[in-house]
Image (tube, helix red, strand yellow):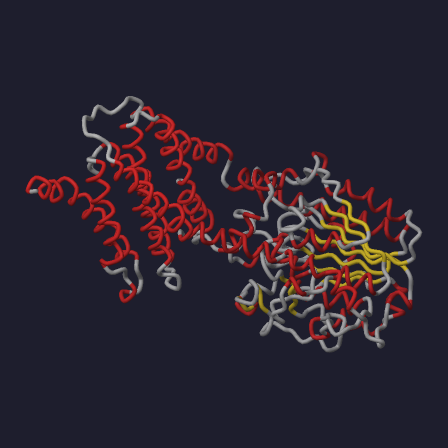
Length: 589
């Protein structure tokens, strides 16, 4: 008994106590609010588990298996708490501690797997244990990379953006903002680390001590606790699970859409465009176009990248709005508000909302949706769900936006009198140099600014061609161009980037002379409001007003063509209602 007590006191107790204290110190050091610091009781279960596991395995945590396990676990114990502390995040003070606890229990899991694998001479168990440790390193690595790029902790919005990104888009983003060599080195380093440790343990451990069944049972229990309880509570995994549930809730939109559409009725007092004039309405949605880097909006910008828009700026049939903003700086989140009645001002849910396609169909338009975006699957992407409700959906996934013009040519041959066509560009999405052919490589400065200007110029030419074709062959009555969000040329667009250049967008409306004659008040209001502040989640109501489709779902206060438009610099919001536009001190650009 004395020998057992001595062993517990020195060989096993000391490592368990020191590791518990280390975890406690990290929690205390990184806590902003002293009252909420973990008490020692939070680490007692780990201390007891570590003590018993060492005793059952007859191996100290201060051995080679223990030190290797510690190396694989330290990133989990330190990364998130230190990032939260450094970023000064105090409203989620409990969450970083969960990563500390996970890291400690991961240490015990890896430790037991290595020891048992060596005792049983099981290369499979040893390889699986070390591989699991290596793969899990991607969690703290993701947190570190995100912080290095954006200077903030990972948010649920950032996770949403990640889950909404396809493989090609992700690869281009990495190439633009991380660099392929650096990304490859990071991934290779993590993947090779388990192989290095496996090489160290490739021989069977010489140990005459029997492996008690109690040790295996305890190891399995600790592993289950680590994987089923604590892993799901870590910062990144918890946010991934939250966003995954949120995305699955989007399917409610599709499930109830047919019923909502059947119940939807336009007011008898509607002034339907299809009853007054016939022709085509075109909505062009740009991608990542910031008016800060468009010379038509920012005359001091170095590159003349908007020759067509500049040429029509003083044309009386065009209205260029000076203060248009995105409601969010990530495509999927922004457009689910832009394209439906849900907005940051009314609190309506996406799942129960009508879309611009619903309104256009009820108003008598044949609807078309042409996109060069790589939409994700139907049940997870709100934009895809809306696009699917159009009469005709075309996703050619061509390399350059100009190649979509042939879809417009085909639509022009359609004998429909009234069309509403949505064109969703790939626009200025990173990687910029991939968005235009070589003969549009007009500007050059050896950096991203010129490349971005080339994407804007290519998009400007695309708008010119769409306008010209529609005028000549489709009896164009209305054309609206805006972007889903803006762009920060150095960092891109991302929910963790809170700069206003990722939100300042172009908004241009063309109305034909025939439309102006049919709706003189509406066009006059557009011109009156061109200096007002506007966020693109009001587009549902603005389009409803422009085509005269009034209903209980229509709000005149969000319609730029209505005299009742009710927003200005002081009451417009962005980032889903969390940031007032009055905080954009450079918003006068």
